[in-house]
Amino acid sequence: KVFYVKAGWLKKESTQKPWLKQKEKAGGGVPLDLGIVMIDLAMWILGYPVGMRISAVNFKHTTKNVEHSSTVFMAVKNGGTLTVDVSWMLHVDHETFYFDLYGTQGSATLSPLKVNKKLYGNLVNVAPAGIESPQVLYRKSYENELKHFIGAAKGLHPVISTGDEAVQRMRIIDAIYKSAARGKEIVLR
Image (cartoon, rainbow, N blue to C red; front, top):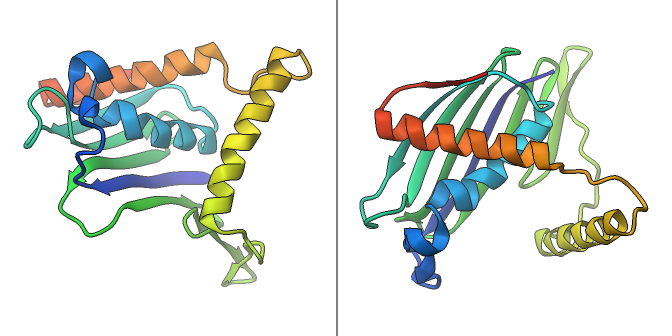
């Protein structure tokens, strides 16, 4: 049973996409760009829990009207917790992506894939050997997403990610913005 997810996507400062810093074009800052991806993955891992408390801090040091960095803490009704750190503009030498899970019988990390399971009193790495490169996996993820979309559009299988799930993610993003603006925890039921 997963009870804690620690996720982050931290990028170094870049000027390659100036529209990201324009709220009227982007809609919002890094919580909408990178944060929602990390939150969606975490919600899937946690089994789409309902009922949560959300606390967030957003930073706009180098941008005027969108957030360049965000730190979020979420506690879900079933006892699980989630932390998400996202940024476009940290003073670091390289991009960092992490997604770590902690459960009652082991732990896992996504990048690089490592799965530790408690077996007979010992922690054993049970991740499959021979994982493909991150670049190949990244490309395959998009190929699989396109295959799913086409298959769902043709009626070959149901849509995996529903509109209701998208609305739930946006409720979470809205709570992140409210928490950061008000400086207090927001409760979603």
